[in-house]
Image 1 (cartoon, rainbow, N blue to C red):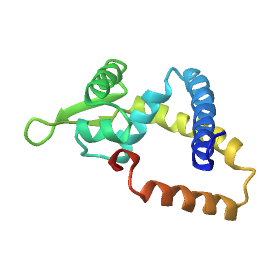
Image 2: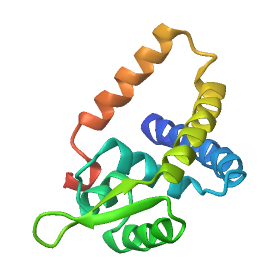
Image 3: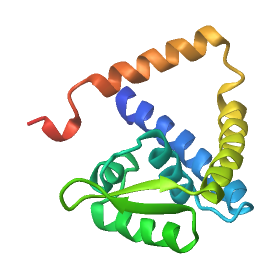
Length: 143
């Protein structure tokens, strides 16, 4: 039998997996993967962030994010420019911004399908609980 925390982790993972499947399908209709859309979102949300910081924000390794940016550049969804030192900065093109906005509608639909059945109060409570868990010491730092 699994522990309560293990079961909670499994439930969170199931919701995440369901969202990823649906988002990949719907974003695919726009010509984007969820990974690409997430990169566009974080580039837009974090102007002036280095590629390494964006990799962390998108849950990618630096190498994987570099490969991803190369694909986004080829698709003319982002443009790059030099930052301070050896860093490279990125921003969305008009085409990238349009796809980000279309994808945001998809994100809203998918997440609303999952969490829309919860009242505003329940959503706030769930948010507070998840933020509390995230603010706690990360598992990798435990003995």
